[in-house]
Image (tube, rainbow, N blue to C red; front, side, top):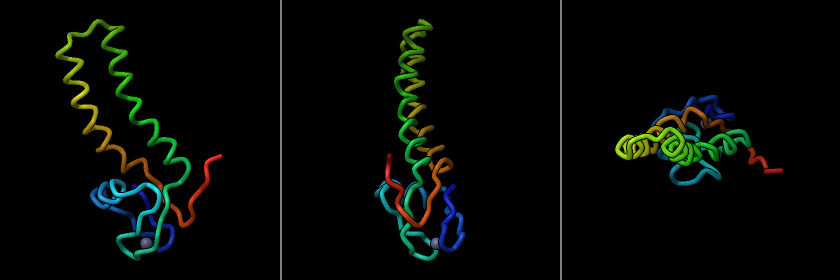
Length: 99
Ligand SMILES: [Zn+2]
């Protein structure tokens, strides 16, 4: 879960989800209202999360899974991504540029 670099407040899961929906570019800390930015690592890790979807599709093709199982897995993957995402977010006071 992200910890505000300014006031050391640990964001709750709910606060993180609500704020990341609005923007991953800059989120105001719920405690001190200071603007916090995702770290480069968080952006990279969270950018990889949707890759789980094609992996499920690949498993379906390679393992010859029944279509119902693959569909169920896909439907479970989306809430799973949303659930684990806040645990992978780190924030800091400045925006880190990619590259
Ligand atoms: Zn704060």
